[in-house]
Length: 262
Length: 348
Image (cartoon, rainbow over all chains, first blue to last red; front, side, top):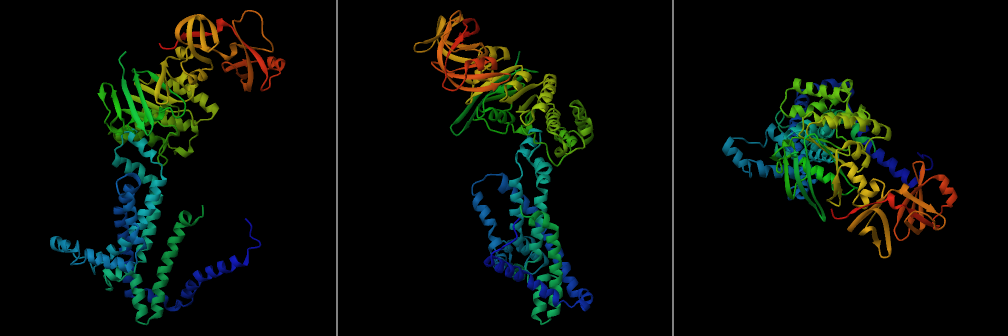
């Protein structure tokens, strides 16, 4: 590779871009109160928010897998009328501001919402401002990531393996569980991690749909926001640091699959 | 003999129409031979249930399976690139079919081990497909297809992915397994050697139609299309027979010791063609002037293509070539003995 004589008009913005990305992280690390860190980490509020975050993002990932993998399979393997439209609709939550997603969820699943009314009347289930609501909000935002990743993996996998399975007497369902899933397992895993990371960082839809109640709906990003608002900068830094560590750990785990340039 | 497979396959693909009839007896191996794009693989996919029939019928062992999905057909398929499941070991690949047929794990592994042993890979069962050589993968694919005890075994270019040497060994082995298979076997190939070695009967398909079928001897002796003639290495012409003379084009006729009247074919091997720098005297009844178009190596000899009233291929020795000063555009005289040509009816 040629490294010498990089033109200045390229080098300068490239360097600035890198600094722009790294400086805030450095700021976070610089302002971390290392001496009081262990004590702050042990604060019940922090532990509670972290527990809730890990729980809800994991549940959201499970929900996304259960709904998203079959959806991705339908998009990749079954040609039905309106498939392109469905694919486009699935990506809407991806580009929609999460706050708008939260409002939309309220209107659909709120106590007086489209489906919420029915859920409430029939099963006595109310989702907004509950931990389940957090899971719903996170899933809504994270599901497109999983569907897109898994659909890509399915399209990349040779569907003739599925034909080979059929000629060996395998039903479509058995083929899905015994051939398709193992073949795209790496893609599903990558999609699930991406989905989990998105759910972990979810803020807008969660606070709109589920509110900000410590121990019930206050996940880490919400706790960061509230701590900051109350003027406790150090507390916010500590919470942020935890999220940063978790994010970097995810990146490290995924680096081979996602970050290696082809 | 009653046919185990009795099918008429009609499949439309845009402007392409496949319409062939196939009958295969128990224990018989039929080769579906044809050029690329002739519809061979489409026919195989239709038999396997991977492509829908637009018309026709499909009976296997007396049962109508036309509308059965692939998983309910008593078939086994060896795909061109084998399609061994990459996440399963060789043993699990072979046991996959028996398991889907409802056998328990132990039974299925028993079947798999027997088949792996039969194809000589008893000690390769734990390997994943990526750790198998091409020839080994081919044998695992065959074992996997046969492990479901198929009434109809389908093979799609089973040797095409192998290098020349492995191909030779595997061809012989495959022949042994195919002749041991009690069901019907259909082999799809564009390689005449595979077809001749492996099959009891050849069905030649061109542009979606059967152009000729029969055993190897009949087809090599009496080709009915240019494609078949080229396959078996013969010069082939169609014309109008009148006794020993077959008129190919206006003013050009070939003489044969065979006698035929009406629509007729004349065929002779390139080795029967002699080339002379000047008009030859003597016995050959068929002589004509021609212009050399092309020379290629052909085994130990040279294959010469000549244009003229008819285009013809001739095989000559390098010594003869040196004597003839072969170069494109050179004018030569072609001679073919009447006794070395075969003439036969074109419509029967």
